[in-house]
Image (tube, rainbow, N blue to C red):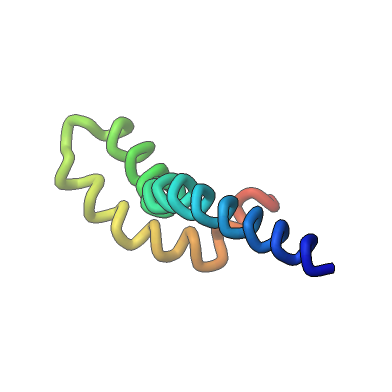
Length: 75
């Protein structure tokens, strides 16, 4: 038990050490990407008026992730 625990701890330390560093970097950009994804999609749609899309895009993101997000794909 003693050696196993020692090894387990070492492995756990190694994994979390490398994991948090890599996953964190990926998670950070991923989180903003999710909300940005919908924004980017709309931006390219209306590249002519970047100001206009921003207005409708702002109110849309909060509503989409609230409940519609699940409703959209479910439908």
